[in-house]
Amino acid sequence: MGKKTFIFIFLVTLLTGLSTAYVVVGAQAYSRYQQANTAKLQQCGGQAPVRICILAPSTIFSAYYPAYLTAQPQVMPFTVAYSSSTPLTLFLHVTVNGFSETQMKSVRATNTMQNASFLPPLLKQGQVLDNLTSEFPTSLHVQVTDSNNRLYYDNDSPLTVHSRWLMQWTQTNRLYIAAWITPNAPEIDALVQQARNYLLDQPPPVPPGLIGYKGATAQQVQDEVDALYDALLKSYHMKYVQETVPYVASGSSMTNSPANDVETIKLPAETLKQRVGMCIELTDVLASAVERIGLHAQIIVVPGHAFLGVSTDAQDSHIEYWDTVDMNNNVSADSANVDADSYYISYKAHGTIVDTISISAARASGIGPMME
Image (cartoon, rainbow, N blue to C red; front, side, top):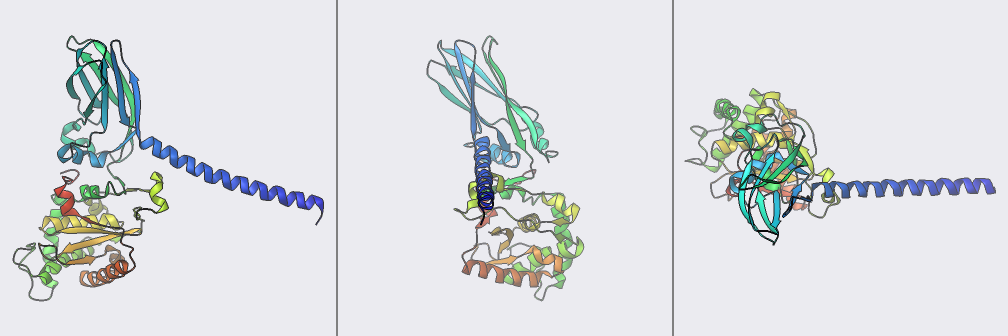
């Protein structure tokens, strides 16, 4: 091999190695940037003798916000730290511009730095979420005055409010998927009404109606869910589109990258209108209908996929499963039930069930439907 050829190969190898390292380091840097961007940021200021520091995230998930307000007061995303070299009564005003009302707290400031946490109520009793289907760049406005209305602090911190469609799949947020399950939506009521027509397709003894657990055998509970599934398939002609659920087992490399754990999920009313949805959206539709008739629903998450589990008795002693992926093959509910039961057994045997999310547990923790 000639000297020039050797030098050329050496340089190509070196440049390839450097470019690979650049990509890896760049990806790691971007991941660190994403993580830093979701952490709380501190901004300080104020007019003497008052010192104010704002501790707030740069982004919030709007889909979770109603649950924070109704039943999880310990989740307070915004913190105002305050002190005064001269003791003063201060009035702290906090607003997410265009998203929330103003929340005010009266505090007694001393030389010691103290904290007050805030969770301002949504504008228009939550109606602000209706049209929030894209990123909303806004700001957190904080104003601090005294009893004489003297202004000590008045500032806006940049804040992005995520679309209500956006779900972040993490262990901490797992129960928030229940916000997308909306049993009281009129569109779900219409689905349930359609499902009554399919009860007669079930083998006898047919349940007298969509009666939940009341007076129903385990088989009749399955028949009720079959009727809901068949209504979605045959009356709505629902189609499944493939989209990976980015929720993976703890310890996987994906869990270390915030850019990989978010997913856009439509509400059941929107899915029913469009008559197409990915696995989690169709599962949410069925779970909404299941909850509406008084049954206990679960969402089973396996690598890249989600499907429905339903307790066949009120004590949750046995679960049956349905997978909406079968809708594309025009598979009726009873066969979809058999298929999903088989899938579940296989996933369990291989230890690949990522999570089982009980909607009843989510409701008990205060996570209600997002827009009801």
